[in-house]
Length: 72
Image (cartoon, rainbow, N blue to C red; front, top):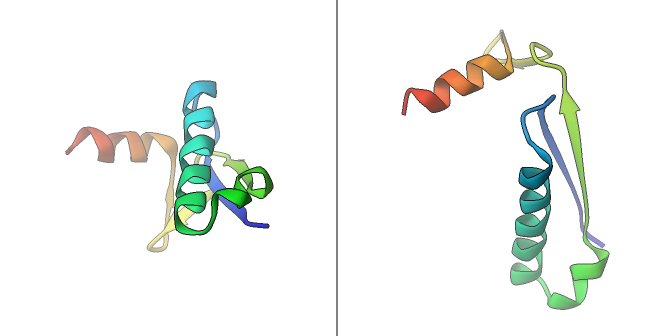
């Protein structure tokens, strides 16, 4: 049984985005493995408090990610 763990910043995803993410990840797993695993694919989404994430020796927050997205 596949178990996929996803970590995002607290309040990064709304309820619809969370639902879409779970559906799309489940679809990807069954596309690669077998449709028989759909009902046995577990996905957990953990929220990390903004500023409690580190990349390259620096703390990273939700606002930093939003700024990165906006700069593209």
